[in-house]
Image 1 (cartoon, rainbow, N blue to C red):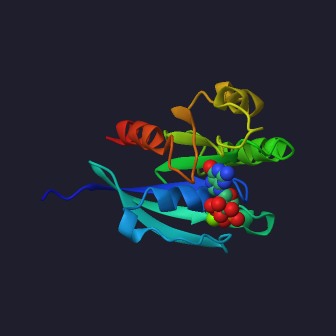
Image 2: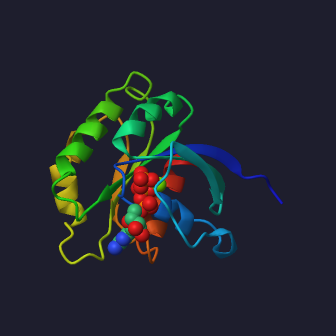
Length: 171
Ligand code: GTP
Ligand code: MG
């Protein structure tokens, strides 16, 4: 068949937000792993949608590895930024990391779509995607198309909506 267009995506966000869980869920069932452990450094993952072939740089969100992120910015054509909607204490840390990211010379002024997953929507005390969006001041992002979806990385709920949006932005 036709070869799908290849896209490089950066998957970023704090540790324990659910990045690896989400990327795993986007793979075909027979390629998914059962046990997900905290990412060391980063991992390169692949999944396909109807028209695109995604290569994802699934970065570790742990503080000691966050300085690795910037080395991959030039390569990335889009960003998936994952937030743990139940982690109210670290929402301000997520906001700071997002601001640092968006102000980086290799990101700023580029038209890179940014997909936000307000993840762990299943947890009883998680914040809504609207609330997460307010706390991260997403309305201030003017130079990039962005979109936020509530998601549950464990069941996969909300992931398709997000990936459909991303695909529309790229094709
Ligand atoms: P680092 O690799 O350390 O940066 O973390 P990560 O963002 O890749 O998080 P990971 O996917 O390893 O998930 C962290 C924990 O959150 C795991 O125990 C997951 O099972 C859990 N988790 C992920 N998504 C969800 C979700 O939507 N709901 C709930 N309840 N738990 C989730
Ligand atoms: Mg991970």
